[in-house]
Image (cartoon, rainbow, N blue to C red; front, side):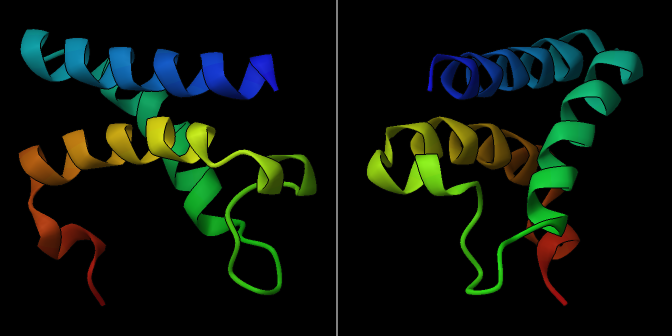
Length: 80
């Protein structure tokens, strides 16, 4: 599970730095990970693989990254 947690922290850091520095490379790199995760839920809508179902801590880090983008871009980006 180490890799999932570290990826979540890395994504959040890239997004924070990207917005603070106005660096589209960092923003796009982080959003690629976020968008992939959101675009590939399992059949019941769960985000992540079966290993992650045992520990929701990793999701809190992922959604923290998503919250950064929502605060900057606005909620309309994620609503249908």
